[in-house]
Image (tube, rainbow, N blue to C red; front, top):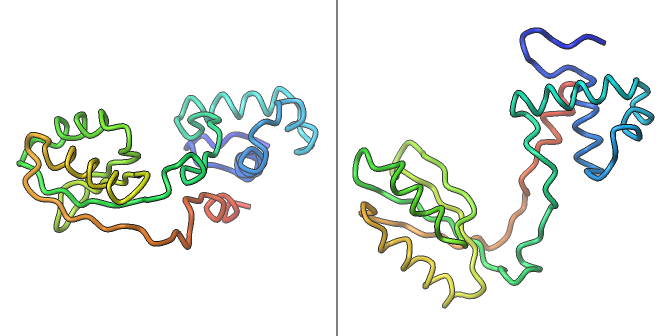
Length: 159
């Protein structure tokens, strides 16, 4: 098995990433045993995937609702032109803001935030609205999450 010089993921990369997706606490030796390759091969693949930014770490998969943040909302923000970086930095300072995406279309930024209750969400929204250069917001509350964040289908397509 060779590493693709163009940097594309190959079958072994996909198998390794699927294994770590299912069992993130596995060690390199156990990964090599399950994949049927040398320990050094697994370590080299992990190092390369990390260096390229494909593998960013092994954080625990947290259930925010179980932590008391049972409400998820999305806000589309329209901001002053040329102020994306400044607004994004200010949004990152709000603990309940989980993600911010620069977007095309109606708004400039899509913000995923969590809260403990409707009243708590109002507090978070007030913080967002009060940010300098935020001109308009439109917020929607998520009622459920029929498809969670996932990468498995992308990795499986490489097999």
